[in-house]
Amino acid sequence: MSAIRPRRSVLYMPGANERALEKAKTLPADSLILDLEDAVAPEAKVEARDRVCNVVKAGGYGPRELIIRVNGQDTEWGKADIKAAAHANPDAILAPKVTTGDDIRWLDEAISETGAPRSLQLWVMIETPLSILNLKEIAAAAKTTRLAGFVMGSNDLIKDFRAEPMPGRENLAACYTLAIAAARAYDLLVFDGVYNDIANAEGFEAEARQARAFGFDGKTLIHPSQVDPCNAIFAPAADAVQQSRDVIAAFADPANAAKGVLKVNGKMTELLHLAQARRMVAVAEAIAQREAAQ
Image 1 (tube, rainbow, N blue to C red):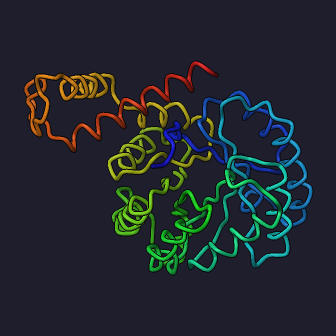
Image 2: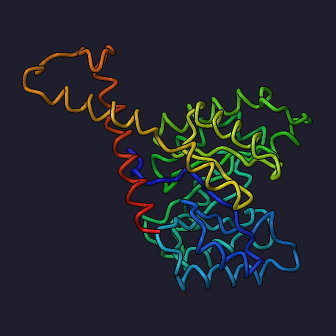
């Protein structure tokens, strides 16, 4: 099972912006993606790489998880990005434009060649039509590699589908469901794509709630104003946590030994609900620890 760690809010920070990288140390985001790809102009790629790797090595980000997004393996910067990022030792490296299981194995080998520890995770962008068609193959590569998570590239999917954005994202629902199914089948993290309309707080909250209902572990973000609402939406509700604690206590009661179904606070509860309850309590406790460490 993937380690329980709060990853409600995963905020992109442009690697070329020194001020933004410094501000990120004060933001309540659970995870930070320090971006060398889309957010950086070609002429600034090398400078951004050096800056991002230096700030990761220097630390100061507290409990925030640090992920470096590198340029694609088919670009002039990709291999050097991977080498530098691995030496900086973030929590994960995020690779764009993967389409097959062979891409995952290539990335895993490239990271391993740097001497990076096995604890350095690989996350990948799911952002092309071919990646959707090959989701099972890509996810299955986790059995023999350091692959640990998917990040949905919703904007790229819309572009490549020649589609148009829809408020309810009906035209991406199948992609999301397949990605989540593949992630859960192979015990991977999976994160929703970004919401582009920064000024539309109501629209963002609606999309974040939808993402949680889909089953995403968290949501990627493009602006600090989205962090607090995202954290609130992806945190379990207090009454749900209390119900979970009651479920755990009920099944632990010796009087209920060997029972597979119980009534807890008026609700019929099975052993499958016990597993859910344990995870919810673990998530709530991890969030409390994370917030206490800010």
